[in-house]
Image 1 (cartoon, rainbow, N blue to C red):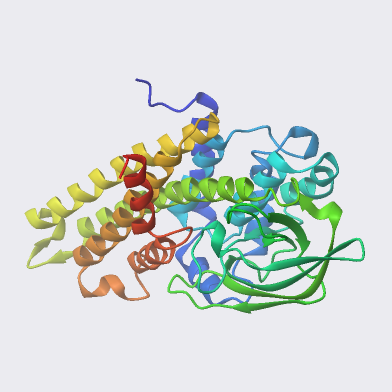
Image 2: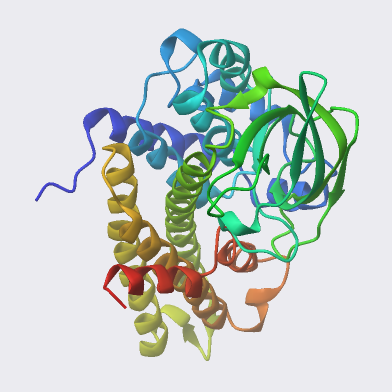
Length: 377
């Protein structure tokens, strides 16, 4: 079995690692946690100039004709560096669905801006008091004057505070099943009637509540077909889960590297921490976790890239990676000692993101249930 990346992907990996290692410092990450926008416009422009924002888009719309697996390579390095930019929401949550499901006019209208970094995108799926399921989508869209009026609330919308391309899953009609009657719209993030309220997750990333009050949107902004949007939502969540798994893998790699560096340089009890067997065993467990995460995360990414059925593999990736990433960050903090959870150390940056990502797009237990169902339970 060949687990190697292609030559082009290895070149991308090295370029991304070198770039983010230089440009994404701990000081910048901490500063952006407190920043109103939550990202560095300067870093965003630099990433855009490298062409990475358009990696999976068609060349005719400013992209590079890359695959989801190519994107996964980039996302791993993004997770390793914790670079504070809205790349994930813009590319995975907005650009990919427009690329796959958008009309020719929609691709022409939105992809060039997303690829150049002039636009920032995201997808609003979850609603208060509901799970990431079809029956939880109740934001209403009523026909009005040749278009629709949107009313309702979405929550945990990543980077909605800066997004101007906002994909929204709404209910346009009641069907025989919860999956019927769901429609996806492409909405202007600054449209009248939209109110964005910042949430305060433990990760300090920019998750938002978005309130829609009589927001007008035209029929030409429907992504795909009216009432047939659930397959789009489901695919986007699969992209998001697989992408998040690779982000977490990268985070695990970055955490491993910084932890090993710390224990080799930290002297305690008259000897370097790295000489203690307990510390060595913890580090061995972390590197084993990282390697296992890599296998399961890249399997999910590869299956998606190949267009294969992968519901079970996606659920397994979410369940395993979410739990493992959180566990290894706790272990890393234990290795550091009490100082590990201070703001001066990077270990807490990884821990807070691991906990923040754990429940997005359905928690591990929800996806364990999906795996169990695939076994016939």
